[in-house]
Image (cartoon, rainbow, N blue to C red; front, side, top):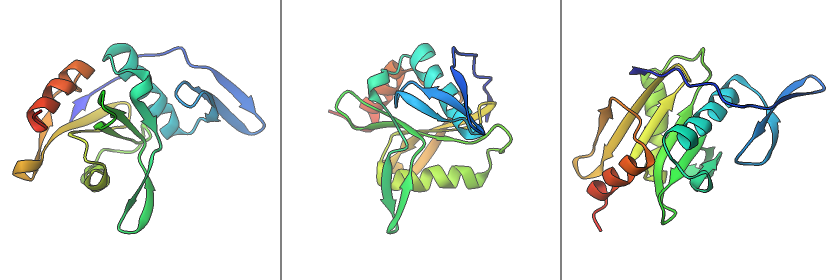
Length: 159
């Protein structure tokens, strides 16, 4: 697990009745600013502004089915062909990254099939490379840039 203090970003907060709202740059609308949403918006900004992930290839709260149950992923990045590249699970800053969190993202990835996984609470993060032919993951000491993720993808999914 690596420390990751996400850098500040130009967020837009507003009050709507009892709810604090934050502008979601991907959905292009105000959403309730829960502690988890605050982390998710920071991660989106970090991936786009610092790691070069194309904004148009990021998808929030995408639905999928696992064991006949509807689930939603927090965030994932797609490769240039629209295939999953990086699956992200965001937790509130007060939620520790435990084995249960790792199991949650690994379980989601059984139906998503992303070659890279990231669990973060905005303060700490764990990033893994999925090695499907070896039926295991390899923990990374960094979050790959988009270019690095595509290079890793070529190893996982040869052309």
